[in-house]
Length: 221
Image 1 (cartoon, rainbow, N blue to C red):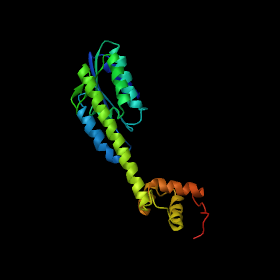
Image 2: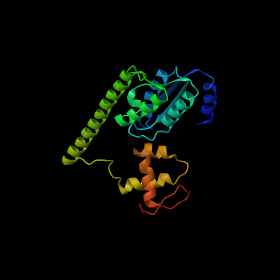
Image 3: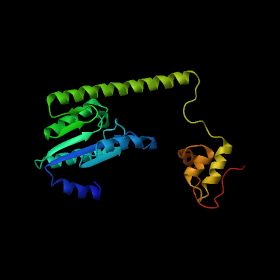
Image 4: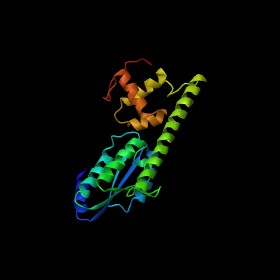
């Protein structure tokens, strides 16, 4: 945990009841910021909120681990602890993982609350409903994967070239010329040439060009 969070934990240890919030979006994409803001706004009544940008498929999520660890730590001090999430799929999209998390929390008398589904796991009925919805979410994820694979396969059969189009030698030359100028940010090069920043780095690695001034480009115009 960060220094600021550790200070917050010390304050939480003085409370009898603690609400811990957890929010997640699936990527670092700027378009996901709104999703994170919506979640944290819904969880604003929590005493502390852990948030991260990770896929729901990924079980290795540091902030979720921190949230659960803190919940268990405080529960051992005979405090009433709840772990709150905006929506069940923010916790995980895999039913087995969800079942394990619910069981772990239940063993420490920690109640899980999902705001959108209005579910609380302090009863057998609530835990069962969580698992049913978790199963539905996993089926939905599998269906998305199947549709995506089918779509890619059909596109390939119809002659559609998948992925980004290859750059011409002229485009690569222009990238290298601008790349070796330390005064031009990578983001600006990408914007000027209508390509991604990763494409700029890829071309630079391809020709072994670094961002040193006066470096000669190993290609003739």
